[in-house]
Image (cartoon, rainbow, N blue to C red):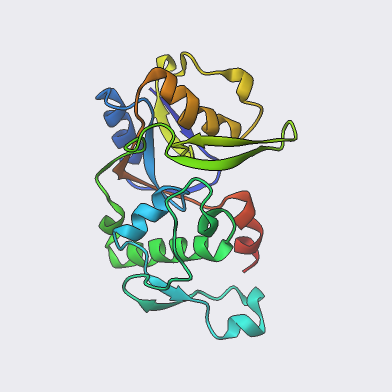
Length: 220
């Protein structure tokens, strides 16, 4: 079993890798993802389970955001409609807004301190529960300067387990660079193999940022 780990995974729960491998060896899923905080699909699942808490920037933020002060907790559950995490591979709240990533990270840190990380554990999740073409979106491949209409159950491959056999049939001609791989793995490849991929709630990890979040997360 191989485990692919992005270089911006900043936290791994104890036994997170072992849980991934154990689930993969059950042979129920083509690919097995960790339970990743700040993830285009799983952040919506965390929200639905009440794992995200209400936070807002401190009052000093408007005067000098570069102070990098911790956000202020405003509620046990995030009920703010301006922080709605859509269950979609191109979720606006995740891919375009650094403050949504801040909510996810602040919630994780608060629950880590409190000892309630179990709130993030959804058990077992089927990424293909609605088939292989659940979402419609535009896919941009900057590596070849092309954009095309896509449909699939695309999920972010920040941390996942697989075997060499699972890569049989991958259309490598469609993998030009980062981003294209998860487009192929979570889309056409799964459909051609007629196999589902899943995520395991016990394997908790934290993904720091997508490239659209990183600059402002580091600055503020």
